[in-house]
Length: 232
Ligand SMILES: Nc1ncnc2c1ncn2[C@@H]1O[C@H](COP(=O)(O)OP(=O)(O)OP(=O)(O)O)[C@@H](O)[C@H]1O
Ligand SMILES: [Mg+2]
Image 1: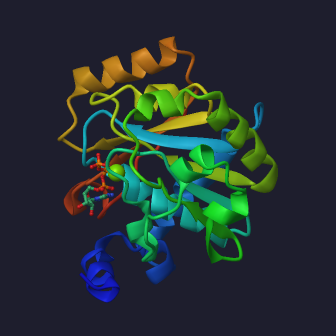
Image 2: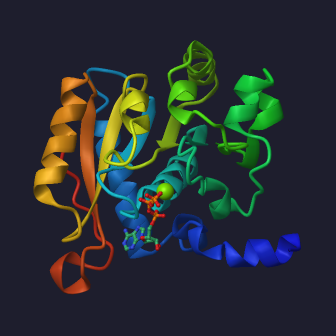
């Protein structure tokens, strides 16, 4: 398949925040950014991971747009795809996921060799080649060391992860980020499962800084509105 055909197929993840920066939907992502910044007052929240209870609740779309509005505010932002099982961040920026996080660690690449620049304020680090043991990779000291290096280079780091109920990955990621955001699809997420996931995360010591509700119907709160609950 040629590149153009492939890229055309991937169009749906292109961030609305860059296509339509003045839209109501983009405004909701800016509100989310503002609310995260408000939770920054007593502890620095520099690395932020998004997860959900189930698949397809909107983690990737929210991560891509959140990183875009952070970059638009003049903060040097890095978006990392830590969904090593179903990586999709590259789709939002018409990039190919050939070299990324896994190569950085396994081939000991420099940050500049693996990160792709989208604009002066936004870089992305795609997942890279699929690895046989993603959870072990996420637990590695090499990844923790890399996260420390990246902290010095960027103002904010947004991380996309797999859903909590499928695998342990997001729980592992929660142990080395400053804050977690839970993405919840309206009516689709099961309340008891969501409560259990949040309580498991908290027990692991995760700092849950809020939740985002996606797929809210127009008649309820306005199309694609977000409910952001501080300290979920
Ligand atoms: N706020 C939203 N409102 C309505 N639809 C949305 C919203 N965010 C994402 N979607 C749609 O939901 C679907 C899943 O989105 P996305 O890939 O971001 O979910 P995900 O949680 O990352 O899924 P996965 O668990 O497979 O990684 C897509 O079709 C996307 O367009
Ligand atoms: Mg995803």
